[in-house]
Length: 464
Image 1 (cartoon, one colour):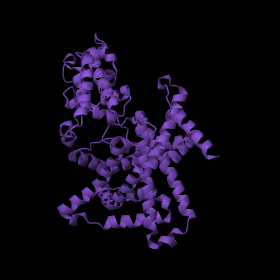
Image 2 (cartoon, one colour):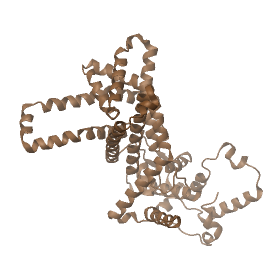
Image 3 (cartoon, one colour):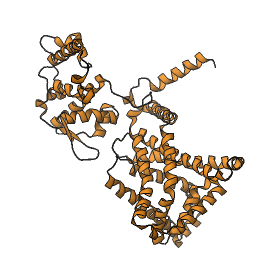
Image 4 (spheres, rainbow, N blue to C red):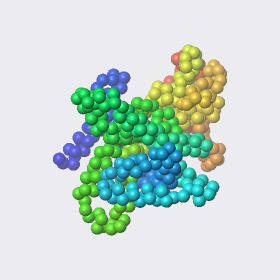
């Protein structure tokens, strides 16, 4: 295929996937387009390098934290008499490495058993806990990046949540496995398994069990670790994508190890470390990929054609601010429940992180306040009849000014300032007396002199 013909087909495919589409019609076409956009966005994210870069950072943190992390889990499990279950879990995780995986498991277990926590002292124990916690913290930072969460948890909440994962998590996992083994040993259950139909079902479930366990683990990470509320449906979808991807990657990696016999000759004694790091990298990359699937499933408004973070233009910032304030005022007038950040994102079709920037500007201006719910709900700080639309727009225009970015501290531009002042005055005259209550009620009347129809007034909303 020639270059121009290929370019035309790619352009046609781009228009088909990213062109204008009436999502309200629904149907299989909308579903197919959403899947296509999701796959395109996932491929773009992988090619962009951020996911791979964070996966490599997690590999480095894992190498530093794996022994303290396993030592902490080993100590907890040893108190319950199930410490011998650590080895099978490690062997299952490192199974794609083949014989090299068994060697890594043996060395790690020997190192943990020889570690004497009692001689570390208070400072050594604190450092051990911090090293173990740092891995979970690094995972949260990576998932917060995927979920566009700018604020991490507080230090106290981090340690309480992380330690609960590190201490209680292994107990729950092995308790579930123990309960399953106990149930399977009951005589009534064994009699049911003797029936051919039940036996086949259980056999099929046993083959699917590795996938189900990994999917459950990934889903738990997506629900529990990010500093935002993740719905079960998207988390389960991401867990399924990540779990199936991880098992498939393990099969492919094991095939590669079995068919490649030159790595030992190239890396000599470092071959086992190199293979271990590669498998860690693949595992973390699959986990981050599943988190991206969950994110796009919960936030389809982030499915856009270009890479990078979407930014609001001046016109869109003002339009979004007026629409958000009007929606809150409408809910207030109707006595309906106040809109949350999630509802505003869905109603306005704007990505949550750019909407948050606009809402924070309205909060600083004294127009909106939010409650302490999670996600927060927004309500008016004043009577909508006392909020003038021109003042609200001026607040949004001035958002972000401060320090050397203030107009008063910039270079003198008298003619430019005069033009902008005339534009601002025209905009103020065209909506003189209009309040947020009028905007929410749809009472948008034109002034008697028709000044709103002039070119200056029509373009004033997007100025400055």
